[in-house]
Length: 358
Image (cartoon, rainbow, N blue to C red; front, top):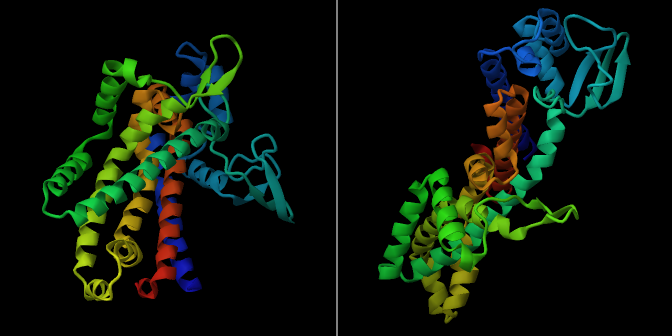
């Protein structure tokens, strides 16, 4: 089992390294001078050169890449003197704990450093830390809604197979899987917050925290979570419904289900204790994958509803060419995807020994 975990973790590490490489070179070959973005187009040459030196943009590309990977690594090597090449241990930049010191080189454990925003000069880590909980909350509520509603609809559809209700669920599933999130967000916001706004009391835009008009500070607005979560959960809801339906129909035709019925077990007990338990494997696979995907898919939904999460941060930083912030957000989403996939692989390895042989 340990060999299997190490193998899956190694694959995940290689994927992350590939993502880091692509992100770094993609954003470092794009047109535009970060120094002029920070200072303005009328900045003098001396100021531009000073900012370029501070950001390390005057160094060769391979040196910048090695330093970038070293900055991201939670365990890294650093020099103590001020170099022009690699691995300077900057007390102002890093929050670190020295593990080992050999001469002029230290092995340290630190918080990954993602750089500073070109626009606000704030650490990218602090900006993402403020936005990430909102995105995580939205994804959890959306996937929870999709699981509960999808499993219920899937069970009813399987039990009433070949009926009008089952066919209507099939149409809903196909429509839900093919509906783009951005388009769905606009339609849902218009219908439930504009056309039916007087009945629903919902807002077209709004985040989890809102500022009180009378100066009493921020307060939580739960109703602003409803429409974004509904929109984000439509596609996984359709998939969970269809997977539950098809898996349950297949399981209900198995011999052990007929045996359970012949023993006189109630229909409810057959479904909940025997059929549903064995029909959930593909559903769990879909849910785990979709939860990670929702972290990335929330970009459009958050932007439409002005939900202050990672999605809004990405869109705003792209509009202002704030590349460190975009790179940090992309890497954060990638790390979530990789770790969730590793956790799911390990869970399958524990539940099904055959998976460990693959």
